[in-house]
Length: 337
Ligand code: KG4
Ligand code: ZN
Image (cartoon, rainbow, N blue to C red; front, side, top):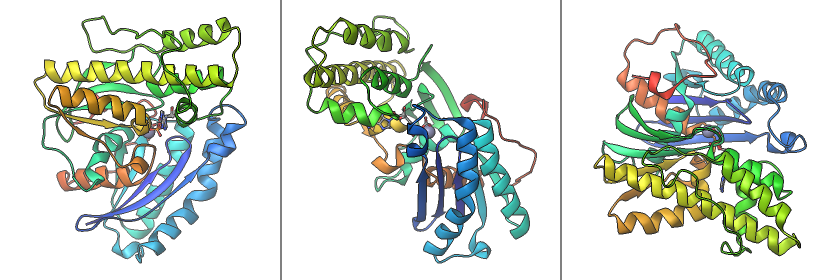
């Protein structure tokens, strides 16, 4: 089966083709980061217009790269939520149109389910169920017990900002452009994380929830209180921020695995690209005998390969594809079955 995946939920327009016997055979991502950078964040209407501008040609390019035409595509999987409504509607409307014209079934994919199963695109493949998943992106910070496709139990989540949002807001304090995560990571390489003492919010609470808005405020006060906030101090604060976020995520994820008696942890979402997080996790998981699965770097941030792959899993499970669905900017992972 060949599935063409389309992603347009935020600021990346992406198309990919997944073949069940070969994996991803062609893919492309058109990032809007430079367009939005001058505004310091994603402007929803600009995002929709950019998706509309590039999606048709990007799709033709991916079909050509794969040596396919529409007749060799068995299904279309499109991100239907969560995300920016206008941006989602561009992908969904395009998918429905080409599906109708070419008589191909179209299936809605939950963006976070795409992230959740992205490790399945690596050489190791997807781990056996059940596993714990730490989903960390710009809009989500979730600890989820996964017992199968569509069988999700939320163990913990952020009560305010997401981890990626914290990276992005802290980056602004440090005068770095959007998106802040990769920028903080770059700057942190030259920094000493021990110079600034930052809090580890919610670490002493007995639950698995997170809170990152206090950390962002602490970063702001640390910057304001620094008498000589020069390039080195900025690098030190970047390193301290990165370590504080990684520490909290890793400790809570390890505790959640223990509480649920699970020995496999998957990390996914844009923040999973962070090397300090990966290193902190590597150390902690070895001490607790947890197997960690991480997606390839390109499949941590938004892409269509993960949508095509999750779509292929859904097509396999689903023999009745209907048109009775719509783009849903607030679609919850736990609404899936
Ligand atoms: O999954 P994603 O690409 O989009 C959403 O679904 O939100 O995640 C984007 C988030 C942004 O907040 C970005 O700053 C963060 O992931 N991010 C990183 C890194 N790369 C992206 N955060 C920390 N370190 C990185 N290397
Ligand atoms: Zn995402």
